[in-house]
Length: 432
Image (cartoon, rainbow, N blue to C red; front, top):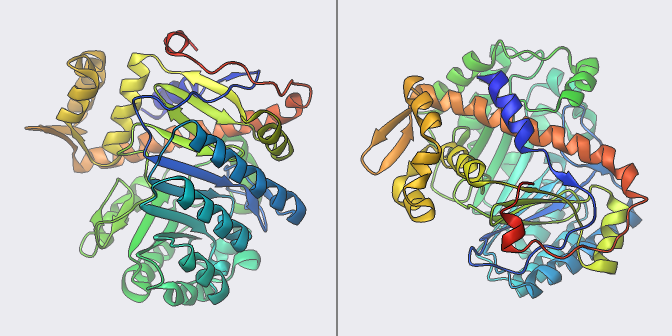
């Protein structure tokens, strides 16, 4: 299964790179979600495959100015998202710049909910006060683990604090926002079952976070090699036993929002891709998915600012998904949220949805992954772990693409900044 998924998602993440492409004006399928990417960090963790760079104050200030300009361009095209996610990097690295950006977002779009990522060393009164004034609804904190030995191996102990410090910081941050989420990683190199159980005990009984996103280590092939030097060899041997222990320990206290998100109450989660078939991204390295076309902004920080101010677009790669790949993408994301509502997909695809994916549904039933229950298709208990594998390989494919785009930064220096015409509907049906 893993080998098949790895090959399949690698093909799906094969983008066309080249001349800058302007995003289309808003279409009938209005995306509800806006994703903002802030790539700057105080230090670079060896396991992280996200688009991130070390903080340079001048470059970051210039970047935020370009990001706000891109947001105005998105609004001018007619997009009106009402849910906003800010990821990174470390979005709170310049709190005042972030607050200024969110103020603009609220002036341009009918925003109902805002979720922001941060690191535990930013759980301070000065930063939290700025975020609360900016009306942030959900704060997601990259804890990863409370084990000091693992934190040292991950390069986070010195930069972001010890397990005890971060536990106290989470306690301090409780109650500031509607939802406080802790991001945790399991199956880290060198992680023992004892360390995992201690992490869970702290989350459940000591800190009592509103929400915990507990996902397996996901890295690009290149990052695995670099990571092994400081963290040790990466193995999948413990992934399934650890997943089972997490599910057992969390079940009495939290309800599942996705295959790896646990919530005490219903509310905003980090998996905006589950219930939204399209989204728009802003910032260097951000992705958009609009009318069956995936777009990726340049990963060059300098070129991003230059392109936005000069041409109004930062898209340098795209991928046109044919009907089968669109349907499969929607299937993967819907079941990431545990349940697929048939009526939603019949409205979107008609009877073609189940015709396009008949082989996939047959394989999932034979594997005991799904159960057909009246108007819903749900993951079984066994299927929930199958979907952890599915999502791990999907995000690994995204991470490998990020590596490709980072390599592409050098080649972009000689590319023209003039954008091509936006993809029209006829073009969007052609193979990409």
